Amino acid sequence: MSDYKRVILVTGSNAGIGYSTVKLLASKGQTVYLSARNEAAGKEAQQKLKTENNLNVKFVQLDITDIKSVQAAKDVIEKAEGKLDVLVHNAGISYMDKDQNATTVDINTIRAAFEPNFYGVIQTTQVFLPLIRKGKEGYKNILLITTDMASNAFQAKPNSMLHVTAYNTSKAAANSYIIALAHELKPEGILVNCVTPGFTTTKLNGYHEGGKTTDQAAEFVAQWTLLGPGDKDKTCLFYNDAGEFPW
Image 1 (cartoon, rainbow, N blue to C red):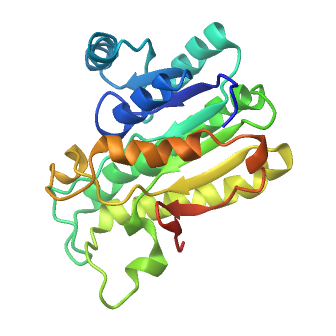
Image 2 (image 1 turned 45 degrees about the horizontal axis):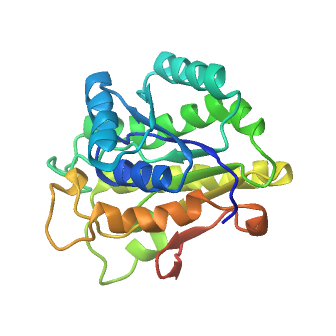
């Protein structure tokens, strides 16, 4: 990792893996934007990092499902920084408390999951791409935090579990978008990848016990956030902490 100080935006980062990722990146001297839909919750998280960890991070209100919010967030960062080196797509929702059986899932649950997990990823990428193009050569990076369950190859195995239709299909669709995006942006030197931290105990899964801590997950996410000039071939990849993961 070089000493270059990146400008990094982590979506949905007032709690969970996103919050821990912001904390770790800021501790490494990066310029990090913590973002949240709820401004009060986001500023509270920002202050918590200052009070508990003596870390100065920036805050921007961002609802990735609201194009006006996305554009406003882009304008804030553009005015302050003039560029964005790394966009980390962390925001998402699972609806694990809803019926997600393939034969009975409510179509509205699927639509609701697709809004942040798929459409939000696309529109946030498109709005911020001009800023990313202004980032430093060798450090431009778009990263999607996804899930093991977004892998069709993994979920097709006879012993696979957790076929939660709305969540899995929305994340698998986002993975497919990332593949197309990676191919399109490769000639520009912009790295585009998916990573899955694996089972981590967070609000997303109802704080189910037995998973990694968010700080442990953030260690892995940070590795892929901080790719540099020596990683120019690391694009259009799907990885977990054990290595390459099947699409």
